[in-house]
Length: 211
Image 1 (cartoon, helix red, strand yellow):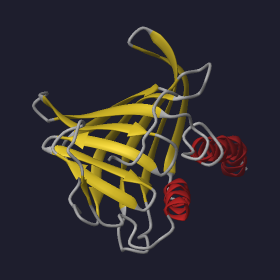
Image 2 (spheres, one colour):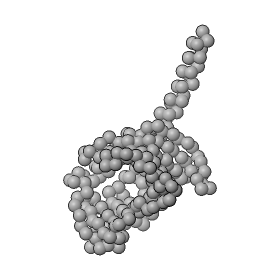
Image 3 (cartoon, helix red, strand yellow):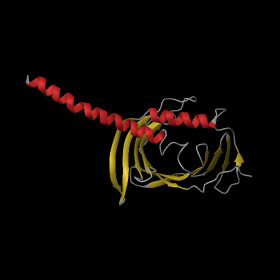
Image 4 (cartoon, one colour):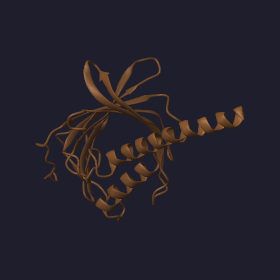
């Protein structure tokens, strides 16, 4: 009888925990589909990513301007790349000169690719943790953690890692994003570096084809 009661109590305890976990998973997926991290809904923003190496040193990774879901300018050590829909250019720096490149989507509709990439990422989310309001450098933030590993896309590419997000509690826009153990089809061994991305909304960003 005691064993039966213990099993019954365990089942009663586990049910709400499962419900909470499911709600958290859907909450995080909702950030990317119809939420503040949906590329079709989010405002234009500037994101800067650095690498934090195992010894604590840092190095720049990328500096990206986003103008909607399919217009971006990404500057990284060694140069810059710009894509506007199916057009692309490269340059030694943000001021050019720009050299026209090939279609970065290889004939796939850019908006369809962006939407499917987002959906693939959201669908792959697991081990969701909704941590509620926490302190980040003296500021209150909503914090989330999860793991992702996408299914291969039409080009055979996949990627994943351990994600941590901090969102402004008033706007729900991301302020800081961390990605640990990044790995993908082109780098199957998890990276030992931590990617740290900070974002800033900037509705003045406008990207146009270079002359």
